Amino acid sequence: MNAELPDGAGYFGGFGGRFVPETLMPALHQLEHAYEEARQDESFQKELDYYLREYAGRPSPLYLAERFSERLGGGKVYVKREDLNHTGAHKINNTLGQTLLALRMGKKRVIAETGAGQHGLATATAAAMFGLSCDVYMGDEDIRRQKPNVLKMRLLGTRIMPVHTGAKTLKDATNEALRDWMASFEDTYYVLGSVVGPHPYPMMVRDFQSIIGREARRQILEKENRLPDYLVACVGGGSNSIGLFHPFLGDESVRMLAVEAGGRGSGLGEHAASLCWGAPGVLHGSKSYILQDEDGQTSPVHSLAPGLDYPGVGPELSFLKSTGRLQCDAVTDQEALDAFRFFAEIEGIIPALECAHAIAYLMREENRTAEDEISIICMSGRGDKDLFEVGEILGLDSSEPQEDEG
Image (cartoon, rainbow, N blue to C red; front, side, top):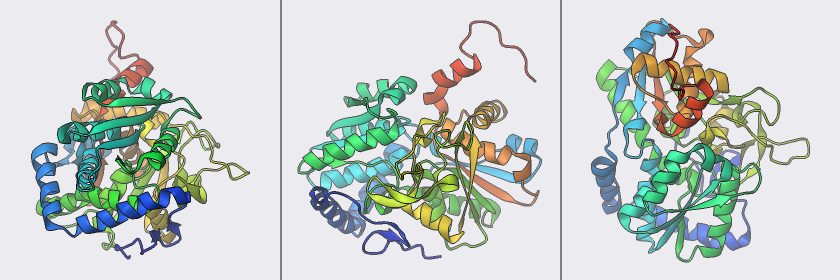
């Protein structure tokens, strides 16, 4: 498996590239040139390492979830604790890298899109620390269900730019952020939050997030003296998953499992499982697996997890699926809710709804592993942001005593 992709034109096999208006090409060429210089600059890498360690709190632990493993009755399940990073998710890995790049390019303002709010919060955090102006585009529906992160972003001095069009979720926020950047790239840097979009973003975000897999690889060898049998991660756009997977691409014995949002069912508009049920197409500037209707129009999507509520996926993950290197499955809203509550009760860790999908996958009877097998789940974020939504659904915000369900 070639881990050095994309090629010079930004393609991972038949996926990727740049499908954008000519007016955006100068911004992309400028960004590509700046990143190629920065990734080879030892001083840039040392500065990024410093902030990842001293500010974000890396390395994140690789934790053996013993009670969870025992209850499943199979092999060992380790959890890569990206939820322990500053701001509560893996997103800070990427925003620190891109914000340092923005400073290197002399930009005074950064913008971002966000769904679950974690990328927006991480961008707002980095912008505050480095003294940059920051605007974050967010759909009205996500503003409603992600109130804690909205309040945090505003406290950090970021302007929330509400998006009222479409489904008012992540896809629509991305559309507006791209429009802004097209008109303002002379002084504005677009901190794209996932491994989607036109080249060089899928490569660049992957590189910044690959610290997850590099650490996990080193840590599991120290703990078990061997590589894991399975890597399991939720997939929306795909940044946490490719961050975990990429350093293991050359290890053919390690199976990689991408878990998407099965939502309410397999019908179009009821889920957000692009790898499982999508087809190749173009979305937000690159070719990948996307969800489309019979006329080729991007389909509406649904997921209880706002970070998975996206009708496409990164081109590198699309390539890995097309070659058979990546296995894909989908988990329903209800399964994710059950896993969210179960993992909190059994391990004392409240997962984000997004990574609850990965937990739910391993909880299925047919996916239980053998006693001598090892799995690593990417715990991409903590569930603080989801408490109001989940609390209302499960009735946990009631003042009445809860019945013992055990």
